[in-house]
Length: 194
Image 1: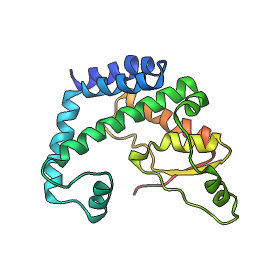
Image 2: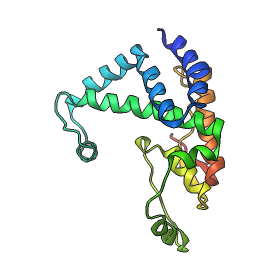
Image 3: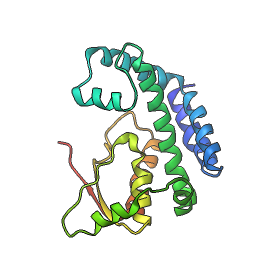
Image 4: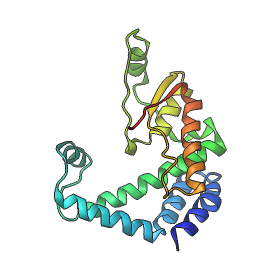
């Protein structure tokens, strides 16, 4: 399947369908569909296979080891598979939030020791909560806002000049920015990347 055909199939059919299914089923279907994009998978595998043997940066090694990954020759396949899983969940989360709203957050996000977070949140000094790409940041940020902890978000701008982004990708990315901005209840700050 060509990347353009897959992209249309993904954003116009698979994701709107997944967004209406129960959570576990939507994740599973989303991952299976995402894995069907063999050209994309091949490109990711090739990029990882080429870059990982050159060596990871020290913090990347620590993150990989923390995640239970060994930095050996086969690591790139495991990392790529986890990347596909993350991408599938992220897409599923955005579409489910779009179609189901805060109800989706109540179904899939639970906080432990929220009272500890609340104690820090109420202090008058500034706070910085770091969320990274593999953290399902959209869900965490949206759920915190919906739980009564409004906060601002700093992100990078969507590169509108990227020739690899289809119209579907651009609409998805705009939705990905708009939803947590609304649900987090705080300001949205775009940091330039010049």
